[in-house]
Length: 583
Image 1: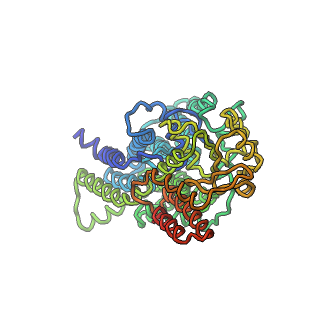
Image 2 (image 1 turned 90 degrees about the horizontal axis):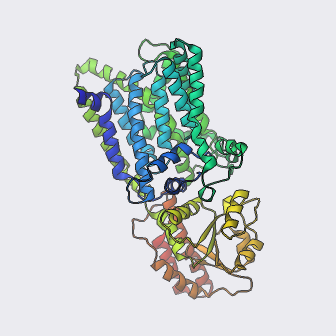
Image 3 (image 1 turned 30 degrees about the vertical axis):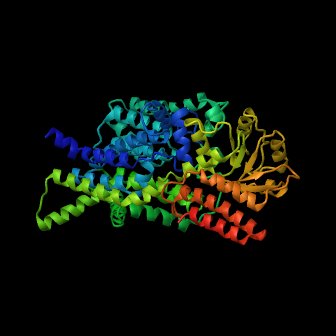
């Protein structure tokens, strides 16, 4: 009976399935920019980009001893453990809000196997810890939660502080947390003491931010020299607070809301989110004698509105290719919040069906059905997941680093190359002699100072386009210089030619190699590139971008050969471009 209670009544059967399933599909490579940054922070420490996510970074550091295939794999395994805990607590939250064990198992199985959840929770990302924080708020704040009085209030305060030390979006469920704190205060024999305990625990929960002030600057994003710097960093002032990017882009409200609805529909099997939202609204508008009182449902509905449509309207990244992949991570919170009304909706459907067929299966049978559903849905996500977890991005950066001559300087815009190079150089000691300059960060004083300490002087600019005078000064240091196509000012002022996936910049008045020599040099480089994996498709995020870069180089070479009258060689170059381009 005890084992059955743990496995079925408390959801541990689903949790064990999640651990096994996620571990089997865990990413062993870095697959996108933030993922590469977090894997690096886990291995060597330092601050991540604002808000710094100190709680997640500290957890990665605490378990950096775990054996794994790579630093990226280790960070993914730690994230999976956090995600499994989130599912366990979410199951408990569903029960506390009034769902049966069977419905909670089914809801958690569907949630854990949804495409976006699987993708993000099986790689180094902060959102699994955010899911654990939110599930904990839902569980502890519930009227039938595990704690009462001052213990409830203090625990919710601590969870709130720790949550903000991981990801600021957990503040969007503050309504539920405040309802729980108010309950704790009412339940306490000394209400003032309960309120004070909640505030004190909240402040203590924020303490991981102190790590940002003491983290090593040489392996960190940004610089923190004062309390004001710490506050600005934690509140993402450079990114506009709740905006996703510092570079604002107009995204239509309709497109943002459609992307959110699409994510919710995929996660909850298209029909369930409609029922879940309907039940959420109904419970918020009409009191019920079952489960959670109306105040909790009103708070949950408000949290869903804030985390869903309201936050979606703040998105300022174009919802195409990479932008959509980045944006979908912020749909995880409303997906999770729907777990409770979906679980209770499943109960209602089951009661309706049982009244007609008069079948009452045992809880163990429902648990087995939940596992079968989880396994089925997980298998269905594998093709897309394997594409996203392709080694193409990491190998693309590795190929670039290995193709550069000794002591080269490479100026790039794309964050996958910036953070990917940092990951390889710091965790695998690949080509530490190369300086990879992130052009988007050259607008920041702290980054210019960091480059200067490594012997690369780039004046702070107003944008990511580096001045030709800076390129001439870098070439005068006798270090080879490479840039990507975004450096239009340099490419327009100095001779250059495509090499690898970058442009080699030459001193003024230096003749370019002939198109035939350029093609021969690139053939030799590409022969040494590691391209032994399934070629990604065009929609496969950073994996596809890596291959678009390969193809772009060969199309440039083909155009130069054609202009030189080498039509046969040009056709051969175009054939190579086709071979390396995404499907």
